[in-house]
View 1 (cartoon, one colour):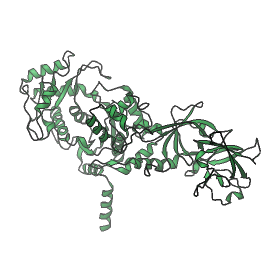
View 2 (tube, rainbow, N blue to C red):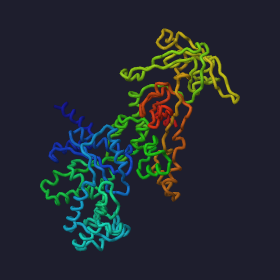
View 3 (cartoon, rainbow, N blue to C red):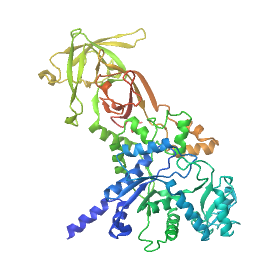
View 4 (cartoon, rainbow, N blue to C red):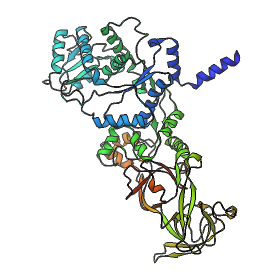
Length: 582
């Protein structure tokens, strides 16, 4: 009996607080024992890594407990929304490995929300206010001082109804009329002080066209949409903790409007909040990301330096690595700054098991093996992935002239230098042991050619291959058979650990706009483009977004703009964390 209790306790501890809450609700039979979640992005930009955490939770909870998860676009602000964003959001969710049960839009409920709002007016729970946003804000009071009632708060409901309908006529001027809930201007929760329900915009909607000129506010839309869809668990980030009582109140009013007051607490969507994903050296505000794109500080939303899902995809991150990272950091009820090194570690761990190993030389210098027969070549066998035998092998061509990395040679070797130098031996990956006999320099003293001899008995797989040497194993490509490529080395976009706070501090100190401030903290070394690199022929056959490991260098992928005529590879992450040393 004691052992069973301990096991149950340990199992309970292994669940995060949201899973524990879901299991408790299921055990109590709430919402008829159903589980239904939703992921509700606003289609006003591309998803970023922070959204991936919410996606993993919303879809993961539904999968884990045999429920449903819907995708619902929060399209209540037509000034910022676009079908381009809708398509990108759908693509990113599926790329991350999730699939929704249904696609909904907040605009699906515009008519029902409008009818509900008219009912609230006639119930005396809402009124049309003609004051400006500035005056309304001043009347809200403070956390220690009660607010002041609007002079329009007690206007006849028939008059409010008439004005509310005028708000949608297309003739009302934006900013002159708003619909407010009549709750309590002295409520300790500032959100209860007669919050706005509708505002005039007079802007066509991407789905409803010109039907609506007055649009519902987020707080009035969100809970009602959850209720109308049958959502049981509304999972939100921590900034919505204070919104939860208002969320519950509006849902209660909606249930009254629908005449569904029986078991009102047993059958309602329940909001639970979790911490956002905050990453060091990362800025995830959509507004600031859009500014980066518009100002040309990055090449677009999918620039590999961007924290967007499409940016990470283009850089070579796998969906499995992102999901693995999210699982590692978990879900809590307090905000924290996660080290980006942990994300990069998860990427290395995943790519180590899936990346195809190839040879690439980024800073080439030529080696001539003087005792290797001119015109002779050999087909050598290279293992595609030592972590996965099923990935097979491929052939690489060896010849008399090869490229190696310039940093792998020193004319006057340091004491602990274990690579190529005059009189020193090294092993060439999958090939032979070679010894340096000299080098040739240009007029400026730069080494342009290295001369070596090879030991023909030491080819990989031959008995002589076991001969012990002090030198390291170097990667290489055949000069005659290598393919020229462009390699883009990406680093962190920001040179400060917390760019969000630094950005705010600069703007306050200098009284400048966001772009001016951002330019001061962008890492000048966030992108290095190498034009004269060489990759082995096999690497040139890889499709865009293929996962590769450039041996001894790092993990790379084939860029989406790469073509057979112009090969482009992106650095995903190094083999080791070099930032820790910095």
